[in-house]
Structures are given as structure tokens and as C-alpha cells.
Image (cartoon, rainbow, N blue to C red):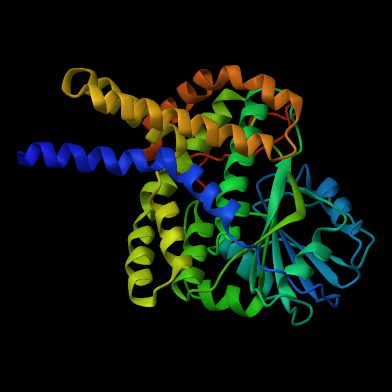
Length: 395
């Protein structure tokens, strides 16, 4: 066997395992005995709810009103309106604190610590909400249940707030897939849920320990944060009933810019996967090992395109290779179907799946814009709102 043959086989294995990993994790999840969580009546911890906005506050009243309707009595809301006109923001409730930085922060972590440094009291926990999110009334109560089990970091579930376009439905399908495998299943087999950027909560002490003093610029602060937590071999819990409603992408231009930033983030931070896999060997840690594998996985459409390339190449190289790749695709499709079937999936999302090729096409376009990804604003706005302007911010 030549060196080129070995390289070709290794390359195919590195791509192909991504097709079968979801179904493997699901099978492991299905047979693994689920730990019985002690049915505790958690006390209402004191939360700081940090809402970050950049340049635009059009959805802030709706976000704040949903937060004020929480069935929890011990929290304050900190709205960090970075580079925003706040003249139209008025709230009578004393639990809402509007913060307008004197200088542009242009960064999630900077906004979070701007709020932390101005806490009205020493909150035990903090949770991060985007400026286009709404929350279920039981959001904090469900988080309390997971913290009561001893976890110090918890990821809730982000469900679609809008399904009014094909792009929004496909975006919603993608979220369901990732929440199922990277949240429910991954946590269920003994590892950690991946962080989703919002709808996540931490003890204030842990958040400060992981990110204080680190100037994390551009998108992807959640990637840095989860790596810092996993480096300590702590687990991030998944709270599937702590629901945040997230505005889904409605415009193709918005989709391309958003995905370009996400792809840029993966290329920037996937190296953390190698670190965690390496640490897992010395620590004998399933938590770190599985999470490291997830971090090394390319964005969905990238490894699907590479897998198709490998299968087509094997038409001229090895017929058995084609059979193996076809089997891998069948298992991947089965895994994708299971994620949607085992989740409360809206009928509109099911109908939108025929448009997946178009969705992948726009993500390929986003791949071409990766190098300039951080030069675009991608704040998600409702379909009736104007498309965000291009600007040189880091959010």
C-alpha cells in the first residue's frame, strides 16, 4: 500500500465518521442507563439576565416583556445597548436596567462584562439572551432544576420564533438536529451539551473564571467559553424544557452573512477539539473525549460536500468504497430523520426539507465570504424589518 493510499484512506475516515457519529451516539444514548436525577425542589436563585443589543433595539421591548412574564421572582434584567439609540426605550419596572456604554464595545464578552461590572447586587447566576429572543415563562425555573443537581453551566433549548419562510424553516430544522445530538443525546451519554450563544446560564463565578480578562473578539465567544469549561472537565447540562424562542433567518443575504461568520468561527476554534481529545486520554474522561470529537466536526454542509466528493472519487478507485459511502449517507439521513421525529417538529419544517439543496447552495456562497465574515452585521430581525446594514462590527 502506497503512502498516497494511506493518506486517502485516512482522509475518508476523518470525513466519513461524521456521517455515522450521530447514529452511533443515538444508539449509545438508547442503551445507556439514564441517571435518576433527584427530584429536588430548587430554591429560586438570584439571576442576572443579560440582554445584548448592537446598533438596533427594535425588538428589545418584546424581549423585555417576555422576561418580565417569567414565573420567577428573583432576577434583574440588564440590557446592554451598544452603539444604540435608547431614547425610545422606557420601562416602568425597576427590574429592568438599561446600560448604554459610552464607547462602542462591539463584542459579546465586552457587553457581558460591562453588565457584570454594573450589577446592582452580587447575582449568584447569570443567563445570556439575544436581542431577538423571547423566553418561555418557566425558563428560569427549569434552569434552577439543573443547577440544583450540582451543574454550574446549563444550556437551554432554542426553538424557532418564526417559520414564515423556507429559509426560517430550514434554519429551524438545523437547530432541531443540533439540539438533539449536541444537546440531549451528547449530555445523555455522559458528555456535555454544546453552547448555542444564548439561552445558556452559568454561575457568575464560573463565567468570570472562564472569560474575565480575555478579550474575545468577533463571533464565537461561546466556543471559547465551552472549551474553558470542558478543560476543567466540568459538564454543561442540557435543559430541554428551558425554552428560548429565537428569530430564524428569513433572507438569503442574511443567511449567507450569518453562515459565513459561523464557518469562520469553526475554522478559528476547531483546534480546541484536539486539546480536549488529548486531555481526555490523560484524564480518562468520556466527557472531554466526545465533546472534543464534536468540536472537530466541520459545519454540516462542508462534510456532506466532502463526503459526496469521496463517494464520486471511489467510482473510479474502489467500488466497495462507493458502497461504504452510500451506507454512510443512509445512516446520516436516518440520523437526521430521528432528530426531527424525536423532537416536536412543526409540519412546515417537514415540508421545507425538499429545499435543502438550495439551503446548501447559499451556505456554499457563505464559504466564499469567510475571510471577510467579521465585517458584516448579522443581527437577525423579523421578516418585516429592514435588512441590517453592512458595518465593521465584531458581533
